[in-house]
Amino acid sequence: MRRFLLGAAAVITALLVQSAVLARLPLPGGPPDLLLVLVVAFALVEGPLSGTVTGFVSGLLADLGSDHQLGRTALVYALVGYLAGLLHDDRPRSPLLPLATVAASAAGAVCAYAVEGLLLGDPRITGSAFWRSLGGTVTYSVLLTPLVVPVVGALVRRLHPEPFRR
Image 1 (spheres, helix red, strand yellow):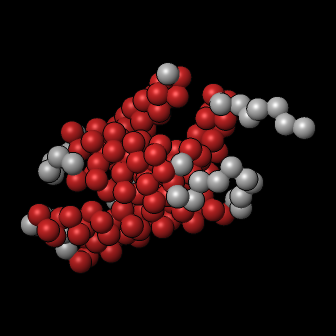
Image 2 (image 1 turned 90 degrees about the vertical axis):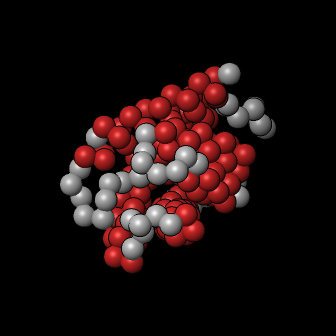
Image 3 (image 1 turned 60 degrees about the vertical axis):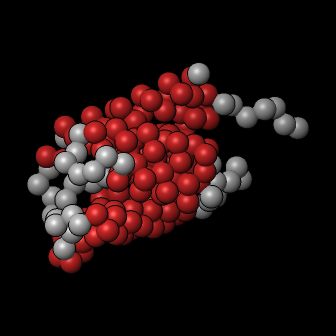
């Protein structure tokens, strides 16, 4: 139950910060995608199931406040959460793994979203918009990674402390 409350609080907080603060920043390439970084953080810390569920729920909530078809972001975030969760490992890992995973996930999310848009006939999907979004999303997501992934990891470890080992 505590894990569910942690996930819900994190997703709602990230969604509010994303829509109220980050979306209003006049940054080249568009705003950072805090929800995407949060999905990858839960996936890396807890595995593919947590990444998929967190991705689907956060994407669906993001879709409710957008002007595109319901489910587009949910599908992309669920896919990203699952794939990033495959890198989950309880052993100590390189500090560069979260940065590389977020960069690859952000690039994959932009590509998947563009493919969805092309298949659904979204007129906003153009070559220049794609490249601008790709550069901005990857760059800003990687910059957010050191602020999000360690915090999520610490909160999850606090909820589920490791058992005593000799």
